[in-house]
Every structure is written in C-alpha cells, then in structure tokens.
Image 1 (cartoon, rainbow, N blue to C red):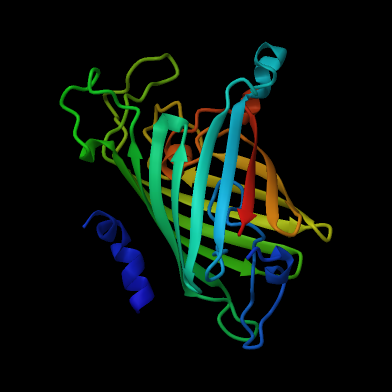
Image 2: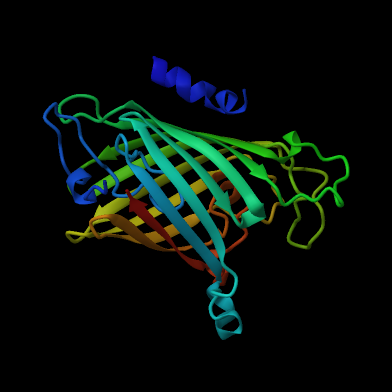
Length: 292
C-alpha cells in the first residue's frame, strides 16, 4: 500500500561498483519471482518494467537524429540531433528515481518508477510498475509570452506499466497512460492553419504497447507503439512507433533504433510526434546505458 501511495503522490512530493547486467537478465530468483522481462530501462521510446537494482547509479545518453528522408543534405539527419542526458538511481528494490535534460524544447524532467507487483512463476501472471514524471519546458521565452508563469511550463505523465515475460525469449508490455500539458502550443492542421473548432485538450490519454524478442545471447529486437486516444481530429501529430535492437555488453546496454519521434521525454513523443513512417519521416537514434 505504501508503494502505491508513494506512486500517486510523487508529483506533489517534488514540489513541497559496476554490476554485470547479464546477472540480472533472464533469471528467476529463489522465491519464484520472474526477473527482467526487459533488458533495458526502456523498451525503445516507452519505459519498461525494469528498475535499477538497489544502489545502482545509471547514466543514460539518448540521441534522436533528424529524419533520414533528406539524405546527404543533412547527412541523413545527423546534423539535427536531439539529445537527452538522464541520471537514475535505485533507491531500493522497488523505487528508481531519475532526473533528465532534453534538447527538445529544452526540457528538464524528474520522475520515478515504482514496482507495485512482480510476476511470479506459479502465481501472479504479470509485473506492474508505476511511472510518473514532471517536466519543465524552458524553451518558452518571456519576450514571446510576457505573462508566462512557471506553472505554464509544466507537463505531467502517469503510466501503469504491465508486462509479462512469456519465455526466455519473449516479453510483452501494455502501458495505459495519462499526460497533461499545462500549455499547448498552437496545433496546426495539414494546411498549416491553427485548429480552432476542435482544439487539443490539455489532458490526454494514450495506450502504449511493446515487446522484446531475444534472438541471440546478447541481442534482442524491440518494438513499441503508443496510440493517442483523444487527439484533435485535424491534428498533424502522429502516433509514435519505434523499432530497435538491444546489445548487452556487460556494464552497459546499447539500443539502436528507428522511430518517427524526435522527442525523447514522455509528453514530447506521446503528444508531439510529427514524423510519418509512410513518408520516410524516420529518425535513427540510440539509447546508451551505463551502470555504476
């Protein structure tokens, strides 16, 4: 009960030895708890049900380059990189806290993951983890928005991460999501006109889904997708889809990926993905984790 309460109240609270990762992957402990449905802390874009072990300190560096459709003009998007640097710490066996800074809208973010229930081999069928974060958009300029306040810059994300490890090779996850942006930039339709008759609601809902298939000792292919449930009907924004590969090399995990989302923070890629896979608007990127 205390873990669930902490998960719910986390946004309010904010404002008042290297380990070999192979030892944490694809194992079952002595009390029949299934460990590590996912190799990394993210599936690709979406958070996974994996938490940092108690006392572990992670550095995550993530890049999303520009869309590859322009070819050599911007060297397949490499000239237009969006970067996130994130630090994570395993406070105990059921709580991981994080702080991050993203280039997308110059966003600062604090958040946490909270293990609510673990999958068991002969008992509870899934793992349930709560994720919540608060982000601050510092890109808004007072010269452009003279009446802007700190509250106007905030966005909030709350997710229930529900995963099941079906075998040593296959894991799947479902992620019901609520996120709220206190200030929405003008939303445009395909003709470049501001949507007025049907504006985007600040409170938004999505359902994320993803999975991992391990095809070699240190390799897996991962896919995730998030369906926005109340997007304005004329909005140009798309649902984020990502396909990636995990490579585990002892002290760190390296994820190589392709996605139509250039934002890395949750509210950014859930609500403001503009790329269209069918038009070649796909960005190469990677997530690199280092544990200390």
